[in-house]
Image 1: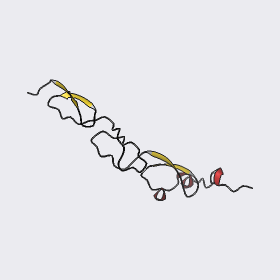
Image 2: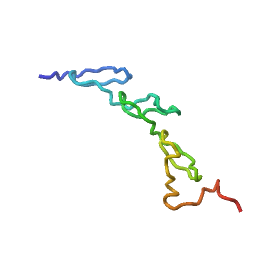
Image 3: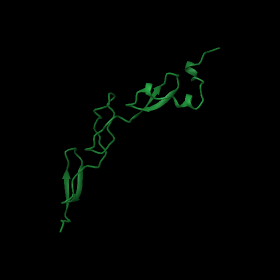
Image 4: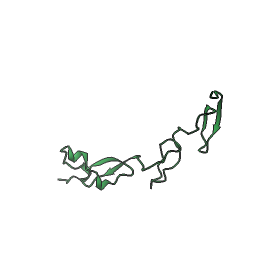
Length: 100
């Protein structure tokens, strides 16, 4: 027979969890620590205890063609094709357009 008594525990991450005494105490709260894999020091955004992995924070990038795309922080711009050019929009943005 399993114990049904609820126990509160402060975890090493600082979050408090309440579970039945026999249940495992793994934190499911979203982490508020910095992602150690991110050069820009974005937050992890994954549950505590889960490896942060590559940073997925969206950032605007100016592509080679001049268009602005939103990529994951960890993505290399040179490895991504511009979606606007791929869809047939070859006209560069006003800032790079030739003035008459």
